Length: 102
Image (cartoon, rainbow, N blue to C red; front, side, top):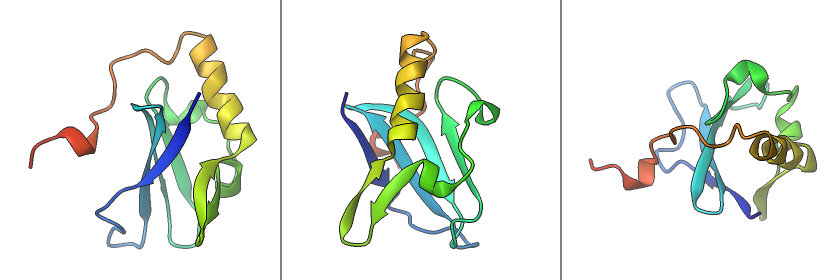
């Protein structure tokens, strides 16, 4: 297991939101966004819907930032690992923005 978080290069939206992609090795497994303060956020997993995500706070999902690399928390890793073991990690993948033309 090798999870990583990539910041979407387009940066912030008009409301100051930040967008990220979460990968398991090279496979895109979720999209993630949060507002400029981190009060509102959403994890959109590839294998389920947003309502399935158990996270209550931004810090339940990721840690780091600034000079530290962004990493998933132990809780987030357990969530994604549980989905892999339950067989819910193999639906059609999200479109990887790094590989789409234009």
